[in-house]
Length: 404
Ligand code: PLP
Image 1 (cartoon, rainbow, N blue to C red):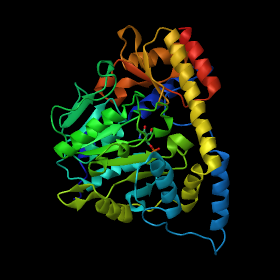
Image 2 (image 1 turned 180 degrees about the vertical axis):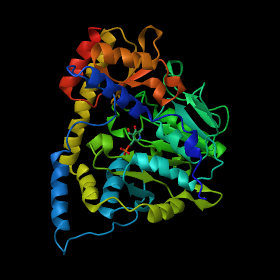
Image 3 (image 1 turned 30 degrees about the vertical axis):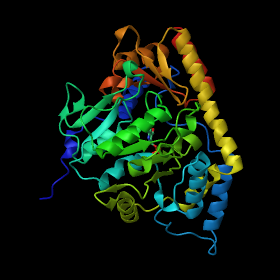
Image 4 (image 1 turned 120 degrees about the vertical axis):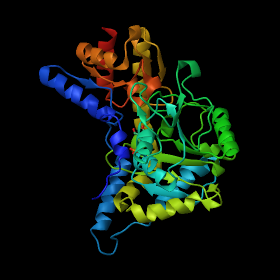
Protein backbone atom coordinates (compact mmCIF):
# COMPACT_ATOMS: atom_id res chain seq x y z
CA UNK A 1 0.00 0.00 0.00
CA UNK A 2 1.39 3.37 -0.92
CA UNK A 3 1.93 5.96 1.79
CA UNK A 4 1.25 9.67 1.72
CA UNK A 5 3.49 12.43 3.08
CA UNK A 6 1.93 12.64 6.53
CA UNK A 7 3.48 16.02 7.18
CA UNK A 8 0.62 17.47 5.15
CA UNK A 9 -1.84 16.19 7.76
CA UNK A 10 -0.18 18.35 10.41
CA UNK A 11 -0.94 21.58 8.56
CA UNK A 12 -3.65 23.51 10.37
CA UNK A 13 -6.96 24.29 8.66
CA UNK A 14 -7.17 25.97 5.32
CA UNK A 15 -4.93 28.65 3.95
CA UNK A 16 -5.54 32.20 5.24
CA UNK A 17 -6.79 33.56 1.92
CA UNK A 18 -9.29 30.77 1.36
CA UNK A 19 -10.78 31.51 4.80
CA UNK A 20 -11.10 35.15 3.82
CA UNK A 21 -12.62 34.27 0.44
CA UNK A 22 -15.23 32.07 2.13
CA UNK A 23 -16.22 34.82 4.57
CA UNK A 24 -16.43 37.42 1.82
CA UNK A 25 -18.49 35.14 -0.45
CA UNK A 26 -20.96 34.48 2.38
CA UNK A 27 -21.24 38.21 3.13
CA UNK A 28 -21.82 39.11 -0.52
CA UNK A 29 -24.47 36.43 -0.87
CA UNK A 30 -26.32 37.76 2.17
CA UNK A 31 -25.82 41.41 1.07
CA UNK A 32 -25.88 41.44 -2.74
CA UNK A 33 -26.50 45.20 -2.94
CA UNK A 34 -23.34 46.14 -0.99
CA UNK A 35 -20.25 47.48 -2.78
CA UNK A 36 -17.46 45.44 -1.17
CA UNK A 37 -13.93 46.82 -1.69
CA UNK A 38 -10.91 44.56 -1.23
CA UNK A 39 -7.75 45.98 0.28
CA UNK A 40 -6.90 42.47 1.34
CA UNK A 41 -5.09 40.21 -1.06
CA UNK A 42 -1.56 41.03 -2.24
CA UNK A 43 -2.38 40.89 -5.94
CA UNK A 44 -1.74 43.81 -8.27
CA UNK A 45 -4.48 45.53 -10.29
CA UNK A 46 -2.62 47.59 -12.92
CA UNK A 47 -2.23 45.95 -16.37
CA UNK A 48 1.18 44.98 -17.78
CA UNK A 49 2.96 48.07 -19.10
CA UNK A 50 3.21 48.77 -22.87
CA UNK A 51 6.94 47.92 -23.09
CA UNK A 52 6.22 44.44 -21.71
CA UNK A 53 3.19 43.90 -23.93
CA UNK A 54 5.17 44.93 -27.05
CA UNK A 55 7.94 42.47 -26.15
CA UNK A 56 5.41 39.68 -25.65
CA UNK A 57 3.73 40.38 -29.02
CA UNK A 58 7.12 40.27 -30.72
CA UNK A 59 8.03 37.02 -28.96
CA UNK A 60 4.71 35.45 -29.97
CA UNK A 61 5.46 36.31 -33.60
CA UNK A 62 8.90 34.69 -33.25
CA UNK A 63 7.26 31.53 -31.93
CA UNK A 64 5.05 31.46 -35.05
CA UNK A 65 8.03 31.30 -37.42
CA UNK A 66 10.17 28.18 -37.86
CA UNK A 67 13.37 30.23 -38.12
CA UNK A 68 12.85 32.07 -34.82
CA UNK A 69 10.83 29.49 -32.87
CA UNK A 70 12.07 28.54 -29.36
CA UNK A 71 11.55 25.18 -27.67
CA UNK A 72 12.83 24.19 -24.24
CA UNK A 73 14.51 27.10 -22.49
CA UNK A 74 18.07 26.75 -21.11
CA UNK A 75 18.06 25.37 -17.55
CA UNK A 76 19.16 28.58 -15.84
CA UNK A 77 17.09 30.87 -18.10
CA UNK A 78 17.97 32.75 -21.29
CA UNK A 79 21.21 34.69 -21.15
CA UNK A 80 19.51 37.86 -22.42
CA UNK A 81 17.38 37.94 -19.26
CA UNK A 82 20.10 36.88 -16.84
CA UNK A 83 22.42 39.57 -18.26
CA UNK A 84 19.71 42.20 -17.79
CA UNK A 85 19.22 41.04 -14.19
CA UNK A 86 22.97 41.00 -13.49
CA UNK A 87 23.51 44.47 -14.94
CA UNK A 88 20.43 46.25 -13.57
CA UNK A 89 19.66 44.58 -10.26
CA UNK A 90 23.25 43.98 -9.19
CA UNK A 91 26.04 45.69 -11.16
CA UNK A 92 24.17 49.01 -11.06
CA UNK A 93 24.18 48.73 -7.25
CA UNK A 94 27.86 47.87 -7.06
CA UNK A 95 27.25 44.13 -6.60
CA UNK A 96 29.12 41.59 -8.69
CA UNK A 97 26.93 38.56 -9.46
CA UNK A 98 27.91 36.06 -12.18
CA UNK A 99 25.47 34.85 -14.83
CA UNK A 100 25.61 31.27 -13.55
CA UNK A 101 24.60 32.43 -10.07
CA UNK A 102 21.19 33.58 -11.39
CA UNK A 103 18.41 31.02 -11.82
CA UNK A 104 15.30 32.22 -13.67
CA UNK A 105 12.07 30.72 -12.37
CA UNK A 106 8.30 31.06 -12.38
CA UNK A 107 8.30 33.18 -9.22
CA UNK A 108 9.36 33.65 -5.63
CA UNK A 109 6.56 31.56 -4.15
CA UNK A 110 7.76 28.46 -5.99
CA UNK A 111 11.41 29.20 -5.22
CA UNK A 112 10.80 29.90 -1.53
CA UNK A 113 9.07 26.53 -1.24
CA UNK A 114 11.31 24.52 -3.56
CA UNK A 115 14.61 25.73 -2.13
CA UNK A 116 13.98 23.40 0.83
CA UNK A 117 14.71 20.47 -1.51
CA UNK A 118 18.46 21.08 -1.25
CA UNK A 119 18.49 21.12 2.57
CA UNK A 120 18.38 18.16 4.95
CA UNK A 121 15.24 17.47 6.95
CA UNK A 122 16.96 18.05 10.28
CA UNK A 123 17.71 21.74 9.77
CA UNK A 124 16.05 24.11 12.23
CA UNK A 125 14.44 27.15 10.67
CA UNK A 126 13.96 30.64 12.07
CA UNK A 127 11.29 32.98 10.70
CA UNK A 128 10.16 36.52 11.29
CA UNK A 129 6.83 36.55 13.08
CA UNK A 130 4.60 37.70 11.36
CA UNK A 131 5.67 36.89 7.79
CA UNK A 132 4.56 35.49 4.43
CA UNK A 133 3.18 32.06 5.48
CA UNK A 134 4.77 30.06 2.65
CA UNK A 135 8.15 29.64 4.43
CA UNK A 136 6.71 27.86 7.45
CA UNK A 137 4.06 25.90 5.53
CA UNK A 138 6.52 24.49 3.00
CA UNK A 139 8.96 23.54 5.76
CA UNK A 140 6.07 21.85 7.57
CA UNK A 141 5.38 19.85 4.40
CA UNK A 142 9.02 18.73 4.43
CA UNK A 143 8.89 17.65 8.07
CA UNK A 144 11.18 20.35 9.45
CA UNK A 145 8.81 22.16 11.78
CA UNK A 146 7.92 19.55 14.43
CA UNK A 147 4.36 19.41 15.75
CA UNK A 148 1.69 22.08 15.39
CA UNK A 149 0.61 23.50 18.74
CA UNK A 150 -2.92 24.81 18.11
CA UNK A 151 -3.30 26.74 21.36
CA UNK A 152 -0.15 28.76 20.62
CA UNK A 153 -0.64 28.71 16.83
CA UNK A 154 3.02 27.75 16.56
CA UNK A 155 5.18 24.83 15.43
CA UNK A 156 7.27 23.13 18.10
CA UNK A 157 10.54 23.12 16.11
CA UNK A 158 10.46 26.61 14.56
CA UNK A 159 12.33 29.57 16.01
CA UNK A 160 9.92 32.50 15.85
CA UNK A 161 11.48 35.95 15.83
CA UNK A 162 8.77 38.39 16.97
CA UNK A 163 8.54 41.59 14.92
CA UNK A 164 6.27 43.81 16.94
CA UNK A 165 5.98 47.44 17.93
CA UNK A 166 8.49 46.69 20.73
CA UNK A 167 11.15 45.67 18.16
CA UNK A 168 10.18 48.30 15.58
CA UNK A 169 8.80 45.41 13.50
CA UNK A 170 12.31 44.02 12.94
CA UNK A 171 13.61 40.67 14.21
CA UNK A 172 16.24 40.42 16.93
CA UNK A 173 19.05 37.87 16.68
CA UNK A 174 17.61 34.59 18.01
CA UNK A 175 18.69 33.14 21.36
CA UNK A 176 18.65 29.59 19.98
CA UNK A 177 20.85 28.96 16.95
CA UNK A 178 19.00 28.26 13.69
CA UNK A 179 20.37 26.55 10.59
CA UNK A 180 18.18 28.32 8.03
CA UNK A 181 17.02 31.91 8.56
CA UNK A 182 14.22 33.37 6.46
CA UNK A 183 14.32 37.15 6.18
CA UNK A 184 11.86 39.14 4.07
CA UNK A 185 12.44 42.87 3.59
CA UNK A 186 10.48 44.97 2.79
CA UNK A 187 8.31 42.69 4.86
CA UNK A 188 4.97 41.19 4.02
CA UNK A 189 2.73 41.83 5.97
CA UNK A 190 4.18 44.61 8.17
CA UNK A 191 5.77 46.68 5.37
CA UNK A 192 8.79 47.14 7.66
CA UNK A 193 12.41 47.28 6.53
CA UNK A 194 15.83 47.08 8.11
CA UNK A 195 18.83 49.26 7.32
CA UNK A 196 21.95 48.03 5.57
CA UNK A 197 23.80 48.20 8.92
CA UNK A 198 21.13 46.02 10.55
CA UNK A 199 21.21 43.52 7.68
CA UNK A 200 25.01 43.42 7.97
CA UNK A 201 24.55 42.20 11.57
CA UNK A 202 22.45 39.29 10.26
CA UNK A 203 25.06 38.44 7.64
CA UNK A 204 27.83 38.51 10.26
CA UNK A 205 25.71 36.37 12.59
CA UNK A 206 24.92 33.78 9.87
CA UNK A 207 28.59 33.51 8.89
CA UNK A 208 29.54 33.13 12.55
CA UNK A 209 27.06 30.37 13.43
CA UNK A 210 27.12 28.62 10.03
CA UNK A 211 23.53 29.40 9.11
CA UNK A 212 22.16 30.19 5.66
CA UNK A 213 19.89 33.20 5.13
CA UNK A 214 17.09 32.93 2.57
CA UNK A 215 16.48 36.58 1.76
CA UNK A 216 13.16 37.34 0.08
CA UNK A 217 13.40 40.68 -1.71
CA UNK A 218 10.11 40.40 -3.64
CA UNK A 219 9.21 44.00 -2.66
CA UNK A 220 12.60 45.54 -3.39
CA UNK A 221 11.15 47.93 -6.00
CA UNK A 222 9.11 49.69 -3.30
CA UNK A 223 12.13 50.83 -1.27
CA UNK A 224 12.20 54.63 -1.06
CA UNK A 225 14.70 55.22 1.76
CA UNK A 226 18.42 55.39 1.01
CA UNK A 227 19.70 53.37 3.97
CA UNK A 228 17.50 50.35 3.12
CA UNK A 229 19.38 47.73 1.05
CA UNK A 230 17.86 46.44 -2.19
CA UNK A 231 19.87 43.22 -2.10
CA UNK A 232 21.49 41.28 0.72
CA UNK A 233 24.67 41.15 -1.40
CA UNK A 234 25.16 44.84 -0.65
CA UNK A 235 26.42 43.53 2.72
CA UNK A 236 30.01 42.31 3.13
CA UNK A 237 30.30 38.54 3.37
CA UNK A 238 26.74 37.83 2.18
CA UNK A 239 27.94 35.59 -0.63
CA UNK A 240 29.11 32.97 1.86
CA UNK A 241 25.80 32.83 3.72
CA UNK A 242 22.85 34.05 1.64
CA UNK A 243 20.43 33.05 -1.08
CA UNK A 244 18.26 35.82 -2.54
CA UNK A 245 14.76 35.45 -3.98
CA UNK A 246 13.33 37.97 -6.43
CA UNK A 247 10.06 38.35 -8.29
CA UNK A 248 8.61 40.29 -11.21
CA UNK A 249 5.15 40.11 -9.61
CA UNK A 250 5.03 43.28 -7.57
CA UNK A 251 7.44 45.56 -9.47
CA UNK A 252 6.03 44.84 -12.94
CA UNK A 253 2.61 43.24 -12.45
CA UNK A 254 3.63 39.66 -13.37
CA UNK A 255 1.39 37.95 -10.77
CA UNK A 256 -0.52 36.25 -13.59
CA UNK A 257 2.39 36.17 -16.05
CA UNK A 258 4.81 34.41 -13.65
CA UNK A 259 8.52 35.20 -13.52
CA UNK A 260 11.13 35.41 -10.81
CA UNK A 261 14.68 34.36 -10.07
CA UNK A 262 16.95 33.11 -7.32
CA UNK A 263 20.59 34.03 -6.76
CA UNK A 264 22.92 31.43 -5.25
CA UNK A 265 26.56 32.57 -5.13
CA UNK A 266 29.24 29.98 -5.84
CA UNK A 267 30.97 30.87 -2.55
CA UNK A 268 28.00 29.44 -0.61
CA UNK A 269 29.08 26.03 0.65
CA UNK A 270 28.11 23.49 3.27
CA UNK A 271 30.96 21.11 4.17
CA UNK A 272 32.63 21.85 0.84
CA UNK A 273 29.47 21.27 -1.24
CA UNK A 274 28.37 24.21 -3.36
CA UNK A 275 24.68 25.06 -3.00
CA UNK A 276 24.82 26.62 -6.46
CA UNK A 277 25.62 23.19 -7.93
CA UNK A 278 22.84 21.50 -5.97
CA UNK A 279 20.28 24.07 -7.08
CA UNK A 280 21.50 23.83 -10.69
CA UNK A 281 20.93 20.06 -10.50
CA UNK A 282 17.49 20.50 -8.99
CA UNK A 283 16.51 23.27 -11.39
CA UNK A 284 17.61 21.20 -14.40
CA UNK A 285 15.74 18.13 -13.22
CA UNK A 286 12.53 19.47 -11.70
CA UNK A 287 11.91 22.83 -13.38
CA UNK A 288 10.86 23.14 -16.99
CA UNK A 289 12.05 26.70 -17.44
CA UNK A 290 10.05 29.89 -17.75
CA UNK A 291 8.56 30.27 -21.25
CA UNK A 292 10.53 32.21 -23.89
CA UNK A 293 7.69 34.73 -24.30
CA UNK A 294 7.68 35.44 -20.56
CA UNK A 295 11.46 35.76 -20.35
CA UNK A 296 11.34 38.30 -23.21
CA UNK A 297 8.63 40.11 -21.22
CA UNK A 298 10.96 40.13 -18.22
CA UNK A 299 13.83 41.49 -20.31
CA UNK A 300 11.57 44.37 -21.40
CA UNK A 301 11.13 45.41 -17.74
CA UNK A 302 14.79 46.46 -17.89
CA UNK A 303 14.48 48.49 -21.12
CA UNK A 304 14.44 52.27 -20.73
CA UNK A 305 10.69 52.37 -21.45
CA UNK A 306 10.05 49.36 -19.21
CA UNK A 307 11.93 50.93 -16.31
CA UNK A 308 10.00 54.19 -16.61
CA UNK A 309 6.62 52.50 -16.99
CA UNK A 310 7.06 50.04 -14.12
CA UNK A 311 8.39 52.82 -11.91
CA UNK A 312 5.16 54.68 -12.61
CA UNK A 313 3.12 51.66 -11.49
CA UNK A 314 5.07 51.36 -8.25
CA UNK A 315 4.52 55.09 -7.67
CA UNK A 316 0.79 54.63 -8.30
CA UNK A 317 0.56 51.96 -5.60
CA UNK A 318 2.73 53.95 -3.22
CA UNK A 319 0.42 56.93 -3.65
CA UNK A 320 -2.40 54.62 -2.54
CA UNK A 321 -0.26 53.62 0.45
CA UNK A 322 0.06 57.29 1.34
CA UNK A 323 -3.70 57.77 1.13
CA UNK A 324 -4.21 54.77 3.43
CA UNK A 325 -1.53 55.86 5.91
CA UNK A 326 -2.70 59.45 6.16
CA UNK A 327 -6.40 58.54 6.24
CA UNK A 328 -5.94 55.99 9.01
CA UNK A 329 -3.72 58.29 11.05
CA UNK A 330 -6.32 61.06 10.86
CA UNK A 331 -8.94 58.54 12.00
CA UNK A 332 -6.82 57.81 15.09
CA UNK A 333 -5.33 54.46 14.07
CA UNK A 334 -1.74 53.48 14.90
CA UNK A 335 -0.11 52.56 11.60
CA UNK A 336 3.30 51.49 10.31
CA UNK A 337 4.80 50.27 7.02
CA UNK A 338 3.55 51.97 3.85
CA UNK A 339 6.81 53.86 3.12
CA UNK A 340 9.04 51.20 1.55
CA UNK A 341 6.28 48.67 0.85
CA UNK A 342 2.73 48.54 -0.50
CA UNK A 343 1.51 47.27 2.86
CA UNK A 344 0.06 49.26 5.74
CA UNK A 345 0.05 47.54 9.11
CA UNK A 346 -2.37 48.85 11.71
CA UNK A 347 -3.11 48.07 15.30
CA UNK A 348 -6.66 46.87 15.76
CA UNK A 349 -8.61 49.37 17.88
CA UNK A 350 -10.06 48.73 21.33
CA UNK A 351 -8.13 45.49 21.82
CA UNK A 352 -10.12 43.71 19.10
CA UNK A 353 -8.64 40.48 17.77
CA UNK A 354 -7.50 40.50 14.16
CA UNK A 355 -10.48 38.41 13.03
CA UNK A 356 -12.98 40.51 15.05
CA UNK A 357 -11.65 43.59 13.28
CA UNK A 358 -11.94 41.78 9.93
CA UNK A 359 -15.63 41.08 10.63
CA UNK A 360 -16.19 44.65 11.89
CA UNK A 361 -14.65 46.21 8.78
CA UNK A 362 -16.54 43.92 6.42
CA UNK A 363 -19.92 44.42 8.11
CA UNK A 364 -19.68 48.16 8.78
CA UNK A 365 -17.50 49.53 5.97
CA UNK A 366 -17.74 46.70 3.40
CA UNK A 367 -13.96 46.55 3.24
CA UNK A 368 -11.90 43.40 3.09
CA UNK A 369 -8.48 43.40 4.75
CA UNK A 370 -6.21 40.69 6.10
CA UNK A 371 -6.10 39.66 9.78
CA UNK A 372 -2.56 39.95 11.11
CA UNK A 373 -2.83 36.69 13.05
CA UNK A 374 -2.89 34.84 9.70
CA UNK A 375 0.81 35.70 9.27
CA UNK A 376 2.00 34.35 12.62
CA UNK A 377 1.17 34.53 16.32
CA UNK A 378 2.76 37.97 16.80
CA UNK A 379 0.40 39.33 14.13
CA UNK A 380 -2.53 39.05 16.56
CA UNK A 381 -3.94 42.48 17.29
CA UNK A 382 -2.78 43.79 13.92
CA UNK A 383 -4.34 44.09 10.47
CA UNK A 384 -2.94 44.48 6.94
CA UNK A 385 -4.31 46.78 4.26
CA UNK A 386 -2.72 46.70 0.82
CA UNK A 387 -2.10 49.53 -1.62
CA UNK A 388 -2.65 47.33 -4.69
CA UNK A 389 -6.23 48.48 -5.30
CA UNK A 390 -7.27 51.22 -7.69
CA UNK A 391 -6.84 54.81 -6.52
CA UNK A 392 -10.61 55.39 -6.65
CA UNK A 393 -11.40 52.34 -4.50
CA UNK A 394 -8.62 53.17 -2.07
CA UNK A 395 -10.02 56.69 -1.56
CA UNK A 396 -13.54 55.34 -1.15
CA UNK A 397 -12.40 52.70 1.33
CA UNK A 398 -10.52 55.20 3.48
CA UNK A 399 -13.51 57.58 3.57
CA UNK A 400 -15.62 54.68 4.81
CA UNK A 401 -13.10 53.79 7.53
CA UNK A 402 -12.96 57.42 8.66
CA UNK A 403 -16.77 57.44 8.94
CA UNK A 404 -16.87 54.38 11.20
N1 PLP B 1 7.43 36.59 -1.38
C1 PLP B 1 6.64 37.38 -0.67
C2 PLP B 1 7.15 37.99 0.58
C3 PLP B 1 5.33 37.63 -1.08
O1 PLP B 1 4.54 38.40 -0.34
C4 PLP B 1 4.86 37.04 -2.27
C5 PLP B 1 3.49 37.25 -2.74
O2 PLP B 1 2.65 37.82 -2.16
C6 PLP B 1 5.72 36.23 -2.97
C7 PLP B 1 7.01 36.02 -2.50
C8 PLP B 1 5.27 35.55 -4.22
O3 PLP B 1 5.94 36.02 -5.31
P1 PLP B 1 5.66 35.42 -6.74
O4 PLP B 1 4.40 36.02 -7.26
O5 PLP B 1 6.87 35.76 -7.53
O6 PLP B 1 5.52 33.94 -6.58
